[in-house]
Length: 198
Ligand SMILES: Cc1cc2nc3c(=O)[nH]c(=O)nc-3n(C[C@H](O)[C@H](O)[C@H](O)COP(=O)(O)O)c2cc1C
Image (tube, rainbow, N blue to C red; front, side, top):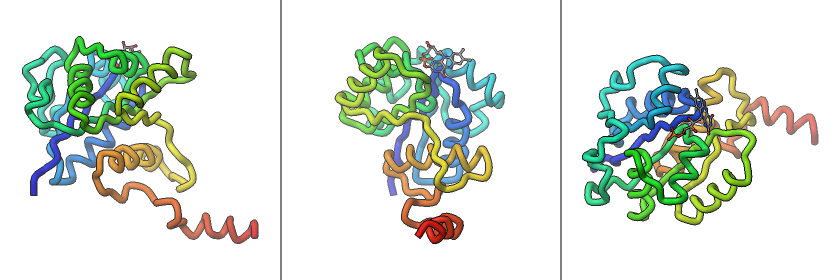
């Protein structure tokens, strides 16, 4: 079985715990070959919100200006990438074809090769500039997936809450997972509430 070559980009927005949770999950599966790239501010936010050395996962971590990284070229056949968290400005740069760091270049490659690019954007509120950039990115083929956790599964911990976003990222990358309870397979608690209403 060939493993999915996946670029995990970590941008300069709050929300590094989403990336940490995704990497924890990827470390436990054997069908994915992740490669990590941070933006400069992504490193800073990771240091502030997580604090551990991302190399501890054992996945390759590429420098933000390392254009010799394999996924800086379409010929290396990376066709899946997520940026989590993705800053509003990172999304805008990608939407406009600006690729002055490895994160932007990898995203550019993903779009030109018609690969799967998931942008897990974290900013609030969104300005008109952000909204236009989101539309441009979606038109170019990216999946714009705001880092917006859901509550209908009654997450009992922050990890559970993070998983409601990570599960959707994995879904869009085509990676089967059971990180969250699926709509339609409601837990007893939800059914009880529905019962009360009917
Ligand atoms: C600690 C910290 C938190 C930040 N949080 C956000 C955020 O949540 N969303 C956002 O769009 N930008 C945020 N920024 C600003 C971005 O890091 C900045 O605009 C940067 O240029 C984004 O580009 P990058 O994603 O390529 O790092 C934050 C910056 C710092 C230092």
